[in-house]
Amino acid sequence: MRIIRAKDYDKLSKKAASIIASQVILNPESVLGLATGSTPIGTYRELVRMYNEGIISFKDIITFNLDEYYGLDKGDKQSYSYFMYDKLFNYIDISKNNINIPNGKTDDIQRECHGYENKIKKSGGIDLQLLGIGKNGHIGFNEPDLKFEALTHLVKLDKETIDSNSRFFSSIEEVPKMAISMGIKTIMHSKKIILLASGEEKGKVIYEMIYGKITPKLPASVLQLHPDVTVIVDKEAGYML
Ligand code: PGA
Image (cartoon, rainbow, N blue to C red; front, side, top):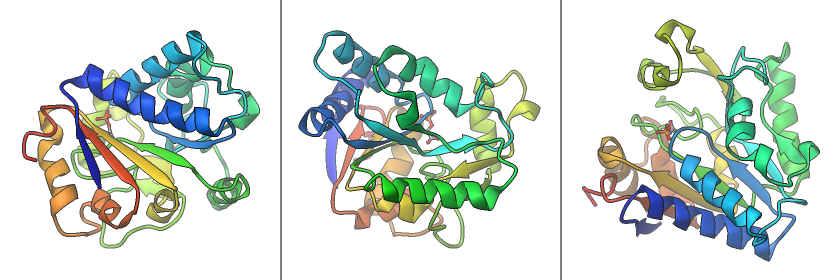
């Protein structure tokens, strides 16, 4: 694992965006895996800036998001689909047909999950996957478990995840209890991975992810086995390294 310590959140965002931008410039038909949450917001802001300055184009880029809340429509303001349009897609030249996010309103989970996996495969696989990390070590919505869940699947969210995500909702009751998420194998098949962590509350999990035992109880620890992972932390998230 390559570890980059950024001075602050702004520098972290700039570094992550520059890695994504170089991928897009080197291969304008790249397949990008994208993440939601508060951590990548600055990265998306930087990518929009670079697009506006004519440095990068997303015209032929294909994207796959890691996850979506189960039960939320893509137009719902709390959905991850809405988040992605609001933070990135509305401001760049990506083709709508090239945007892939699990359908949280599907009436056939099996079909949705298989279909998502097949679409990733058909696109040639993910060239660069962006990840955040939960305080409990989740990546995507792969929560701590007794085994690594391989492929895209329906997940029951952890209490800690529901508590943490309640900051985006007006009450904790409104937070969906389930989600559709890429699996660990889906993520591990990405050719390159960047994982971002900001803030002191991520310090301990980042340390354990890098130096601890590889265990499904801390799903991100599996990244120790991936040949091309770059972890970017700000000063606070890197305080134990
Ligand atoms: P955060 O979420 O960026 O809002 O901290 C990360 C995650 O849960 O994966």
